[in-house]
Image 1 (cartoon, helix red, strand yellow):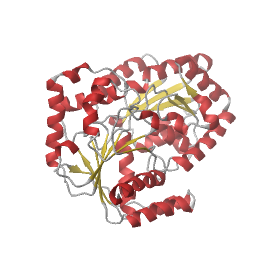
Image 2 (cartoon, helix red, strand yellow; image 1 turned 60 degrees about the horizontal axis):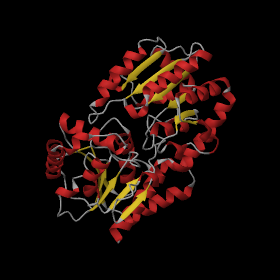
Image 3 (cartoon, one colour; image 1 turned 90 degrees about the vertical axis):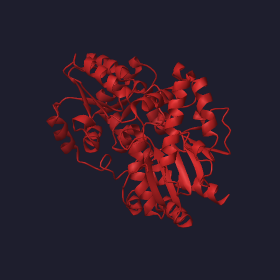
Image 4 (cartoon, helix red, strand yellow; image 1 turned 180 degrees about the vertical axis):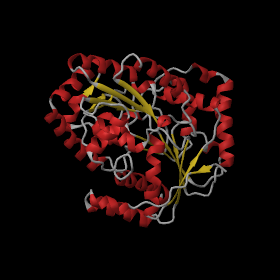
Length: 414
């Protein structure tokens, strides 16, 4: 059998402390209507990356409203995850010529076949996250469950050959879900296609309230000067997060704000072999400047430390050039920290109103916005407050639960 991640039961009523009563009541009502439904989310890693981050909190809350929810993680060797990382990149527009090779296709198909044979099939609904396990449904033709494919990446302009390979597997599902309508490939033929944005857990260790002076003390213990300005980017070590663009923007900003510090905080995941080389390259660049710090989950920087960095920083940067959603943007805004971010993918969903003025399309623009916010802290604080309200209204877990359970209700009741 595949690994099941044991998480326990959450407490949906906590959200009544920070949100209006009506949306919580709607989720509880949906849970009552679907009580006892067996639901399984499937992905490719138990830690690192947005999907795992989301499921850790999401599955317990589903259980809290009466859903029998589980999370299963597929297995794979380095060759399989190297291929699926390339598929991930290709969905976001990168070329991947090896997909035409029979060996590449066989590796992907055989791994999905092996995982399908080990999957616990006793569920009413499966939610398959991203391209790694997309072929599982194909290898379980007798399954009577409803199958949903959930795409978390920007698939608005996928590599044609890769999409041609994946599309038949996706089309065997009963529904497909994307973050925004712009991400839906035009030639996709699935009975139900819909959109829903991810969300964050306001009560996780990564997002819970911590007093700012504690956060400043924590980062000081990691080598930062608490009395100097700090900007931070939190992300996987991934080319699409444009880490070198962030470093260059910092260098330009530092010309006007001497003493500026930059934290590059990242995480590794078992399904992302590319991250090791990217981490090494970022470190090589950072070592040229004593005020750039590269930290990760391998060096003891976990969720609580990320929380501290997002609260202690004067500005959060997320200079992505492709982005499915960007949970780290929502996390920073929830903490009332202003954000300068790439005008890419799902980020503009979160940075609306006045925040949209801080969506950037170049390194130079990124540096300019960083400098402006650092020099105008009152503006920065106002944006932070506005951002928190956007997240409260649109991007906390109960809203995602409502969206997904509404889709599931539609599928299982016909």
